[in-house]
Length: 205
Image (cartoon, rainbow, N blue to C red):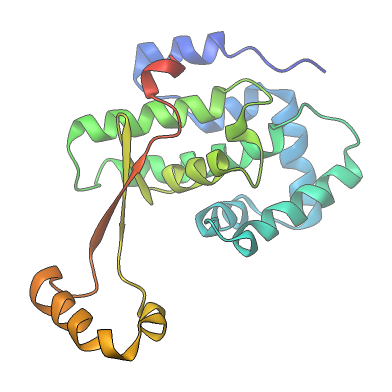
């Protein structure tokens, strides 16, 4: 089955400023079939959101996604590549949209979030953002759950210094490190980490 065209959805984006993931799920039969199969397995939409929220750089973090994908594939022999991942990102985007309005960021950042949501939910099948385990999919998971903030060519993440790192610091360097963290860095968190965006936003529209 051919991948669904995104023309109508993108037209809706430019007219309303946001794509509603729920309407995308209802519109595309591929997503609807996958969603129904996930329910039959006993996994809810909120369960899917939690899976997406837990995806990170470690391979263990996206194992639940891979396991669910395998379970769906056993029952649905064929569906366009990337549609399972698209569905999960639709669920995560829909869950985050209400919270986006109260997020303490500039309106320009909210606008970038909406563009990212629209891109992930309408990207062509085969996009790296719709392939589980890729860095691009991890990025999409972090943005759709409001863990990673788009800023044009750069993204940023609010994080901190893990306490587990202290065990890796040589004993002779520990006092100096603790002094720096306390006096210069201001504690273990928050810490803002910058990332080069995988692909400039302008190149996706």
